[in-house]
Amino acid sequence: MSKKKENELKTRGVSNAKWGYLFILPFFVAYTLCTLIPQLMTFYNSLFMNYRDGLTQVGPKFVGLENYIKLFSPDNTGTIGILKYFGNTIILWLMGAVPQIIVALLLAVFFTSYRLNIKGQQFFKTVIYMPNLIMASAFSMLFFVLFSPVGPVNQVLLASGWINKAVDFLNIKISVRVLISLMNFLMWFGNTTILLMAGIQGIDQTLFEAAQIDGANSWQIFSRVTLPLLSPILVYTVITAMIGGIQMFDVPQILTKGIGMPNRTSMTMVMYLNNYLTTSKNYGMAGAVSVVLFIVSAVLSLIVYNSLSAQYRKPKRHRKY
Image 1 (spheres, rainbow, N blue to C red):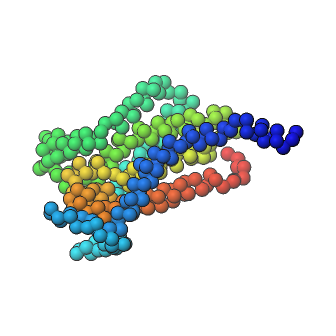
Image 2 (cartoon, rainbow, N blue to C red; image 1 turned 60 degrees about the horizontal axis):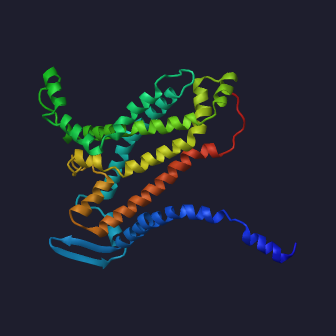
Image 3 (tube, helix red, strand yellow; image 1 turned 45 degrees about the horizontal axis):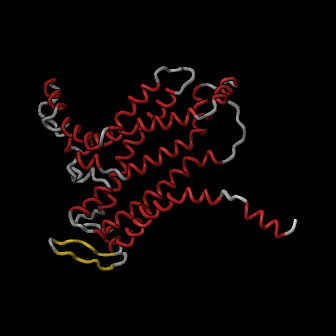
C-alpha cells in the first residue's frame, strides 16, 4: 500500500479521543470558572489591604504578605487567634467524626452481613439517612431551644430533682462542644453508613466464603478481608468528613449566636472568616484566612490519605488466618 493511501485511510478513520475530550470539557470549563479562578482571585485579594471603616472604604492597597503576618501575630492577651480557632475546629471535628466513622462502620458491617441476613434493609437505610435531610439551621435551633435555661431539658431535670437551678448548657465549654459534635454526628452518620454499606456490598462474596472455609473468625474476616478492600471508600469518607469538619460553620454559628460562646471556645475557622466578611468588611484578611484554610485542608487530606492507604498499597506476603 502506498504512503498516499495510508494517509487517506488515517484521514477517513474515526478518532474517539476527541469525543472523550469533548465530553470532559464542560467539567473543566465549570471548574475553571467556578473554582480555579475564584481561588486565584482569593489569593490575589489576600495581598491587599481592603476594608471598610464606617462609611469610608480603605484600599485596596497592596501590602504583600502583611495580612498573613498579622494573622499569625499574637493579640493583646498573647493569643494567636487563628491557631486558637483552628484548635477549636479540630477538637469539634474529632469529637463528632470519630464516633461517626466507628458507628457507621459497625452499622454497615451489621446490615450487610450475609450471616445475619437482616430483612428490611431499605427501611433501615431510610431511617438512618433521615437526619441528614434536616437543615443544619433547624437542627441547631431545635437544640438551642431544648438546652436553653428555660428549655425542656432543664425543666425535666428540675422536675425530677436532679438539679436545684437551671443549668446554662450553652455557656459551658464542654457542654457546647458536646452539643455541636452530637449534632454533626446525628446529621452525617447515616450518609457515611450508606457509603460504607455500598462499599461492602461491592466486595466479592466468594472472598468471605473462602475465608470462612479457611477457618477465619468474624474479626479476622473483618480486619483482613473487609477493611483492606473497603479502604478506598473508607479513605474517601474520612477525607470528606475532615474537609466538612474544617469548614464547620452553620451549627456552631447558630447555637452560639455567632460569637463562639463561651469565650470563643467553640468558634471555628469559618466563623472567624465570616467575622471579617460581615463585621469589618476586611476582604484582605478574609482572603488570607481562606488561603490558610485551603492549605490546611490540602495538607491534612494528604496526610490522612497517605496514613490510611499506605499499608494497603505495599505488597504483603501471604498470611494464614
